[in-house]
Structure formats: C-alpha cells, structure tokens
Length: 248
Image (cartoon, rainbow, N blue to C red):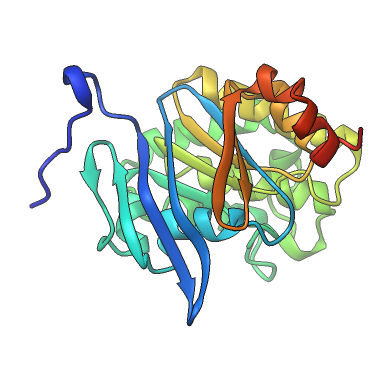
C-alpha cells in the first residue's frame, strides 16, 4: 500500500509531481533530473527542440518507459513501480505522438477500448454522449474503420478514447502535428473544455506559440533538463523563448 505524499503546508497534492525524474536508454540519459508539477484544472506545456526529452518524459509518466531515477508522484502517491495499465485505472491517460489508434478496428471499437478498465456502463454511456457533443465528427464516423479516417479525425478519436478512461491527468504528445488549422483549432477547444472540467493536462506541442497561448504555465526543456519555467504569457513574450522556439 502506497502512502500519500503531502505537499508543504498541508496543501492538496498536485495531480502530478516529478521529482528529479531521470530516464535512460542504455548509457544515454534522455531526461536528467526533471522537476515539474501540474494541478487539477491546469494546462501545462512542455516545449523544446526535437530530442530534448519531452516525449520520454510523457512516456515515463504513462508507464511505457522505466524510470532510472527520481520520483513520479500522482495524486500524492509515488507510482514509479506501478505498471502502465494500473496507471490508467488511477486516472492517467496518454495520447501518444502518432495517435496510437487501432487502425483495423472501427471508431466505436476504439472508443470502447478507452473504457476497458471501467465497469460502470451507464456512466460510460453518459461520458460517450458528452464526448460526442465535444467531438461530433467522432460520432459521425462511429462505424467507420479507424484507419480510413483523416489525420485530424484520427487525432480526435485518440483524444476521445483517452477521455473515456475518465482521466484525472491527460498527457498529450504533439496533438497538432501535421493537422490542418481547422482541426488544430477544434482540438484545442476540446482541451480547454477538459481543463475547465478540472482535468490536469500536460501538453507537449511543437507549435510553441499555440501551446503558450493556452497554457497557465509552461516549462522549457533542453537536453533532458528544464531550463526555464513561468506562466504561458511570460514565456510567450520571453526574448529567449521567442528567438529559440517562435522564429523571432
């Protein structure tokens, strides 16, 4: 039984806290002692160049990568040794880079895979209806084979599937990559709606301008280290960030 880890001054624990997180691939250390946190109802972005360690960080949180050092704390409980499928049950959902949908299954079958850990059929149906309100295109494609969807539709499906696990923490890895502006706009509308409902969101996004515009807080990652942190607005107008990631 894991004991809760309380934040200082008796405050409610963050939904997610990384304490000196380290991730390695053999002798190569991809994440080198990262500290960050995300509270309920907060959108936090992790930006940086390719190879900075952002995806490795998300995969370590989701459980598909082992932690080489430090601690992963979710809802006040250390989860370093908790397997990935148990993390889903605890309320952690990852939408991976490349979406990770089951291309040979229908949209409906993909959605049911998102709810596979749940046994509350009526509430699943209620959540499904709410998701169809947020993402009507998913409902329109319900009986279509997922591999025949457009890239934007597949991303919507991946997010809808993750939401059906009823996450407390939603991890999004490059949700706008390769998508038309109309789909990107819709996906960020959905993310904002999810945050308003109290879900904690940690976003890795190549479009730093877009990510910072919508984030309450953000972290800049370089070579496996956090080099800068602040509110989304502060980093959006930071000269170093603008020069390095916003093309100015």
